[in-house]
Amino acid sequence: MTETIDIVLTGPLPNQTADGLDKAFTVFRPFTGAEQKAKLEKVADKIRGVAAGESHERLDDAFFDRYPHLEILASCGVGYDHIDANAAAKRGIVVTNTPDVLTDEVADTALGLLLATVRQLPQADAYLRAGQWLRKPFPFTDTLRGKTMGIVGLGRIGNAIAKRAEAFGLGLAYHSRSPKPGAPYPYYPSLVAMAEAVDILMVITPGGAATKHLINAKVLEALGPKGVLINIARGSVVDEKALIAALKAGKIASAGLDVFEHEPNVPKELIDIPHVVLLPHVGSASVHTRNAMGNLVVENLKRWFSGKGPITPVVETPWPKPTKG
Ligand code: NAP
Image (cartoon, rainbow, N blue to C red; front, side):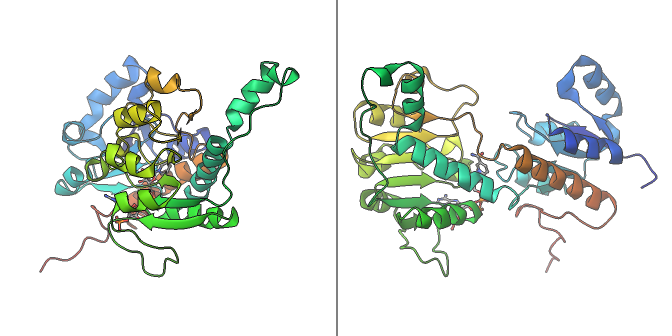
């Protein structure tokens, strides 16, 4: 590549990735301060690519309006509910995400969160550190023995969670909009019916409008007073107010949450419930996996600008473009 290609990085990426971007492109980082923002404004009509790093910014028509010659938006993460991919498609902008490279990491975290929640491991750690073990043993907890887990969203990560859960001896079932051919677990077209039948709900669907508040008061009621909810998907999938009410009223037993409706803000009412386990959205956040995700962002951009097409386009912006007629 001899010509200089100008791209925007919307938020931080792992160092290794950022170095890869700088080697291949001229990179503007508006999130680092006024100086970079001002520089970027001067060259906005030359921007041809966006690398979407860690940021809570919504990338929609208003964002695309700023860059009239944008060709590709390469996002770091498999979920892209913060991107209006349909609006991008209308403008002929290709959107890419980072599937597969994070699947095992997120599945590991999901099982860790489940075990931490059911066996109260963070609470036991805090108990020891507070010197309470010297007075009396930590109280007995609930168990995974003999339990059944319903997976909400049996996709790439849902399947990886299911494999691990089998090794833990859990019974399994799943719900999604369509049955998955070859899946060896019972399929529930009704989420409420599955919640009634299982002890644990593991939520791992995409976020966005289609799944907003999929886990509502009715689903939580069906899960029941001994039920446990784990959400490693997106905060928007769970009606947080209904969840807090259900936990306070003992309508479900507990919850383990990696994601929240208004991140990074977590309601004080949730923080004040001592037996829930709350993580700051760390599902994929290991050095190894974040580097792998970041490298895929760089490779998508490099491939695009060398004319070979993107590696992992999202379904809304397929590549090669389907032929009309
Ligand atoms: P995937 O392979 O596309 O799987 C998504 C699954 O959800 C599919 O089985 C799909 O089946 C189901 N689904 C979609 N819409 C649904 C709906 N309205 N109701 C019920 N089921 C629905 O995606 P993936 O790679 O497993 O990733 C899943 C999600 O995990 C991502 O989109 C992201 O939001 C989240 N995630 C979180 C973290 C974290 O750090 N906590 C990290 C990575 C990913 P049907 O189409 O048949 O419904």
